Amino acid sequence: MSRFPDDGRLRLTILGGYLGSGKTTWLRHQLFEGVFRGAHILVNEAAETPVDDTLLASQAASVTMLAGGCACCTGKDDLVAALRMLSDSQSRKRTDDRSTRRIVLETSGLADPAAILDAIQKDSVLVHHIRVDEIVVLVDALNAADQLRTEYLGRAQIEAADRIILTKVDLVPDPTLATVLATVRKLNPAAKIEAAVKGQEFALPDLPEVPPYNLPRIKDAGEAIAPTRIDIPDDVDWAGFSVWLSALLYARGDDLVRVKGVFETPAGPLLIQAVRKSVQPPELLPPEAGQRQNQIVFIGRGYTGDELRRSLNYFARC
Picture (spheres, rainbow, N blue to C red):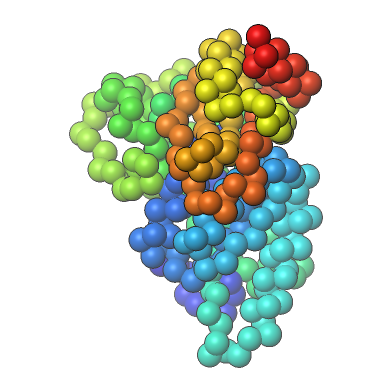
């Protein structure tokens, strides 16, 4: 429900959160529950090979993919163009036939929601047609300690939020969860804080009051995080690939912040996801997802795509 009176403008919810925080999982569940009924979903992925639109298409009323650049910077022009198109389409409808009144933007894990909000407010067209209803940011409780100590963007996302959803809270002990909660509250005292497990609302337990993490000052962002797409050769089977991926994450998990893609198996296309050294159980996707089979996106720093390809080719053929 909107926090503002109806002034005829489209309502926009910005969904943010660092790489691997569970944005798509949470949004899929909200759509299943009818929370964003009839909304047009904009999905932004930094990589040129998207995955999330396939996961959302069966539950969303309509989906637009913005791939190949973050909506807050390199992909900003594409975002503004998409929002202008939706605004124009809405304006052309009869007043009693404006079925799409809400937009949900699922941002890339490398996007700063505050920069997106600023771009909308400074656009002479969008400011009259779109109102940002809420900025929702997901925080991965399992990996928050490392992310917030080393990645400035993770902190900036939290600071921009109206509502914060702590995810993967079932995977951490209460003392850790209490510290994450205290840190998030320190970064953004005004935000409403909730929790979710696999996209479903989760009641936070009674937690002790503890001090937040002592976050160091980050003076230099260092080498930029960037996406790299790897097309898996046809002669590499699932067993060989999964062993190689496990070994790679064990050795380079601190550099590989996020892994996501689809691998075709005899049982059907499998969604592969990992956050640093933690690999999620593969998810069997609908058959239509196979159109992007054996394409895996690695997001991180400190390596090149050629190095990953050589490693895979060497390992798979040993």
